[in-house]
Amino acid sequence: MKWFASSGVRICALGLGMLALAPATALAASPAAADPAATAWILSASALVLLMTLPGLALFYGGLVREKNVLSVLMQCVAIACVCTVLWLAVGYSLAFSGTAGFIGDLGKVFLGADPRAALVGSLPEPVFFLFQTTFAIITPALIIGAVVERARFAAVLLFSALWLLAVYAPVTHWIWGGGWLAKLGVMDYAGGLVVHATAGVSALIFAMRVGPREGFPRDPAPPHNPGMTMIGAGLLWVGWFGFNGGSALSAGSDAGMAIVATHVSACVAGIVWGAVEWIRFGRPSMIGVVTGVVAGLATVTPASGFVGPGGGLVLGAVGSLVCFYAVHLVKGRLQIDDSLDVFAVHGVGGILGILLVSVLASPVFGGAGFPAGHGIGAQLGVQLLGLAAVVVWSGGVSLGLLWIVDRLVGLRASAIAIEDGLDLAEHGERASQS
Image (cartoon, rainbow, N blue to C red; front, side, top):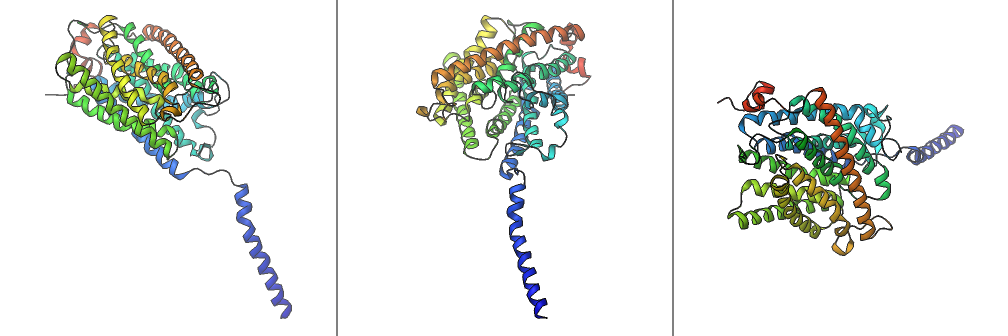
């Protein structure tokens, strides 16, 4: 019995020792785990960014067109969300975020690869990172349709959006966010001044020039049929932009918080400036003008949002609103280009301006987070200019080629009869209002 008891003690001690060692051994061998806080935040941010397109952008654009074309704008936004999501899953995400090549990704993440549940991107499960990036891949081509509302064929919009996602958006995303050649040079684009706003703005301008102006432009501009709808859409865009810029931190912390603060400050200042300019020039501010200014401020702060402080947000909002205001009049007035809902003048010009200004405002002297190692203001400005030139040339040149293809396949412009009747009825057999 004494032997059994002493043996039992030794066995128990050995067992307890093994149990004590087991957690450390398992911990050393276990793979990195996802950060629950970051995961929860990016899931929430993904919902906010999707809200920007559906229904935010759809309502913002829908309120600005004639009543007979409202449904066509809403339909285009919904259809683009559906088509671009499937394409992004199938191949677009892989082209943007896989491989080590400088220009384009490989096919290693087609349909999210072999075991997406086990994969991590930083501290995020890869399906969560994919979802967040999907919402960007939806809103970027959706922005373009604002330049060609009321006269572009539905088939042309869909086909161009699909081709553009793969030929323009995916490569540029890889260059900057996927570890491509511009990322290696140290280009700074926190949430999409180049990836989203410059690509969409330049391509929208090319599309508007290629499809031609609306009837009566510029002598007989049609007033927005429902400014209230536009204000609701702008409000949803504003709230959704917190996820757009704050989510680009890919974590729940001070970087996300500062990005949202800078975003909100920029939007507020931009709305004030646009309204003030209208008040001075026309004797009264308009609601359409103020919310357009807000969107201009949001677009301008986007590439800089996580790199600047609140003071940077103030400067970006004020300068962005003022420059975009005059860009609207330059494009439509002097250049006579019917960029119907000012996609290039607001999103394109705003994003480009933010890309350039971040070279100064990210400096710690102005409360910013600083530059990549070895870069000062001058060196960073050179990198930003190079990135801007590459993105503008690529977006414009490829878009021109894609529009040539689309025109040959399905035609770009709706018929004169369809335009007269309204695209709601001609393209979809429905009206937004049956009264």
